View 1 (cartoon, one colour):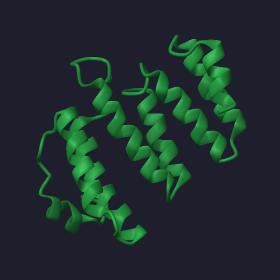
View 2 (cartoon, rainbow, N blue to C red):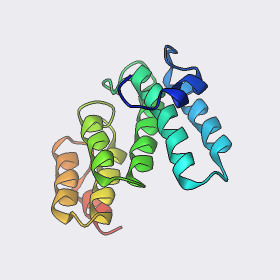
View 3 (cartoon, one colour):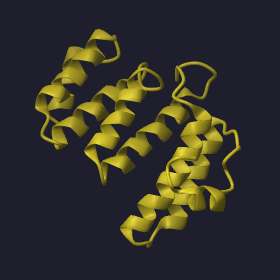
View 4 (tube, rainbow, N blue to C red):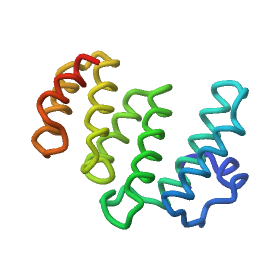
Length: 150
């Protein structure tokens, strides 16, 4: 379906599977265990295929409703961290999508985004992420300052 990775998706057998956030989280943990010891490129490829299937089913939703927001958020955050291993821009795109969905109500989103930006030398973007967290009422000023200096 346009990403050129049909073999991985077929192998996973997940093209039409609907996931609950909790099942998605346990499924990803299983795939991570299965990928231990693989060469980095193959590990990223397999995990990316799994995350695409899972996040495609979960969507980025509002994150706060339905009781699955925490697990849904954690899956998306781990996906962003995986993408950051090979592409800051791909990870940043996931973070942007999260902020309008599953990350909006999560204080951890704002600190994780700020740390990601700081690790990639984008201190203004890191400060902006923390500021948005404070403005959204998800971080207090002290937590934002601590997050910036962590």
